[in-house]
Amino acid sequence: MEINWYEVFIQCIGIIGIIAGLSAFQCNKHSHALALKMTEEGAFGLQYFLLGGYTGAVLNLVGIFRNLIFTYLGKRDMQKELKYARIGLGVLFAVLGFLSWEGYISILIIFAKVLSTFAYGTTNMKKMRRMISITCVCWICYNFYVGSIAGVISDACNLGSVVIGMIRYDILKQKEKIKE
Image 1: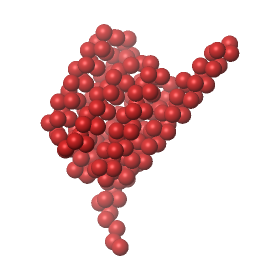
Image 2: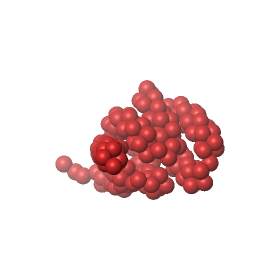
Image 3: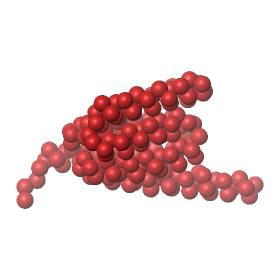
Image 4: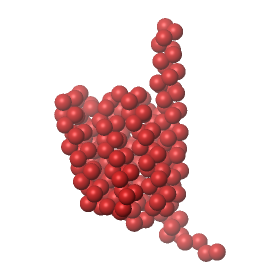
């Protein structure tokens, strides 16, 4: 059996995404989580492009732009602008998703990107983690479809990381507050 080094290279790009994605949901600061998500989306955007998953590539690369906007608006506490940015970016993801249509599988990631746009547009980490748990499941399905082994691993790990973050910050910290 001969090793296809190009395929190995493509899958290795996902390792960067895996590391960044796992780290993002362990942050309790919004801007740090978004910076790590930009790294993850860039790595997987490149990987999807090389695998021929153009909807995933386009939507992930636009996700970097989205996260930059949200980081800027979040740091300046521009809630009204953030609301409009979420709506505008949600529409942009839907349009670009349909323009790069790969079949019905595209609906999953269009939904995931629109939902994650609303998730990352909130500075409430508890709400963000809940919404992102749903998007992880959508991306796992897409990753199987395009053949991104690293993507499947990453989103399964992201889902686990989100659950750990929910337990650490949303459940255990809440119990500590009740005890006080």
